[in-house]
Image (tube, rainbow, N blue to C red; front, side, top):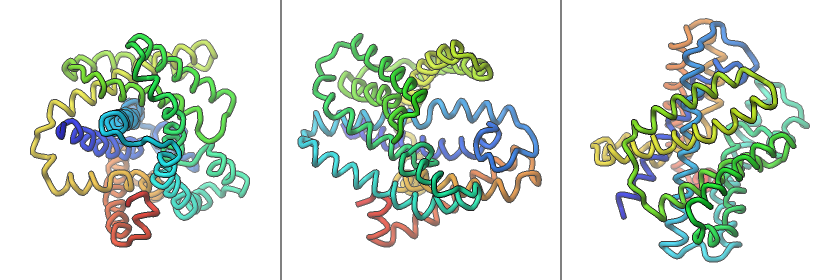
Length: 337
């Protein structure tokens, strides 16, 4: 039992670091940090970071579902809906409000010259709250899944498969209607959250990680090629491919982490620091990368810039974590008890 929960810590920690690595290269997507254009194109970095983006945050959602199943149905907690929502609001919405007001918005005003209306749309209505989108999405995902959780326990596997696919497509459809509060993302991620619940409940034996890696890479490559086409039909096909790309990527990562679950790295002080602070590092890393790009774009070649972005984000985030951890009020404001 303990090893299964340790796996969750390992997965969350690694995936949060992988998100930072992804964003360190995301400038070369062409639609990320658009206040300036890359001095040099880097299609390989764009391809690699896009592929990483189909794995990292979805594994975190999968693990969240895994833990929800364990805590609610095996430990017997989360019995009262209102208490559950209050707990998640403290954990997710308090840091959302705090970091939006005192971290993300000032950087958006500085770099993007955002107006009051844009700030309201992005952070109050939740249309584009930078990296904080995940906190907002996860809060509403928990609100959505709680009333369904008991029913999910009685579903057969083919029904679960249908539920996850429909939830994913419904969420993608909501993007077309510009639903606020990150509700489209909540329904998209609900699919992978439920997968995590079912994985915990049934405890299947996964195939070797590389047996997921090949289909994941092939599916991603096809989807990446189709992303340059803009017809509605092609978009729908790509969305379907993306669902299976993400699913294969999740199980590839889960199987790989489990294979090396007993490695010595998990007992090192560096890992323990990242484990305790990975969420905080995720919540503040993006704006540090903005500053790094603004400073070094055109001075350093793409590979070097990506490395500097990552090193700057990790090191400065670590300093911020040390400072925030020292005080009870700041710990509360970043969602720590």
